[in-house]
Image (cartoon, rainbow, N blue to C red; front, side):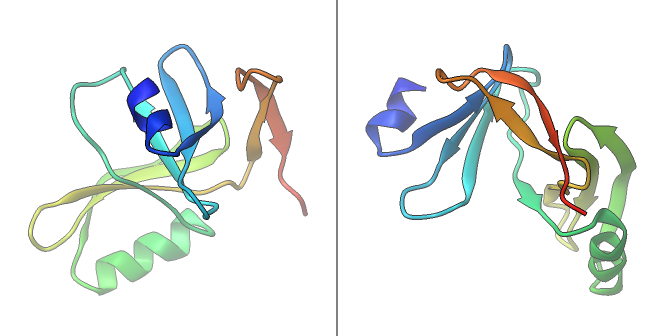
Length: 111
């Protein structure tokens, strides 16, 4: 994490196996994880269902159908060249953190 913080990425949240860092001048996050050795690219979408439908119509395919995560739903897809991407939504809310960035819970999504 020190490496990415030295590049100007501010710590937004952290758990035992993951950390989210804000990209400079953006609301986008870089998420680092130690749960799996595979590098993944996560994309936040408004809602998993419509995003998956659009992805498939464009020629992609679903690798792992939607499943629950703390903040909403998540799915794994592959583009026509077999590059895997992780799509996730915030349908359940967003992570709550303490003053040190440690995840303390999930705030409910706004209606």
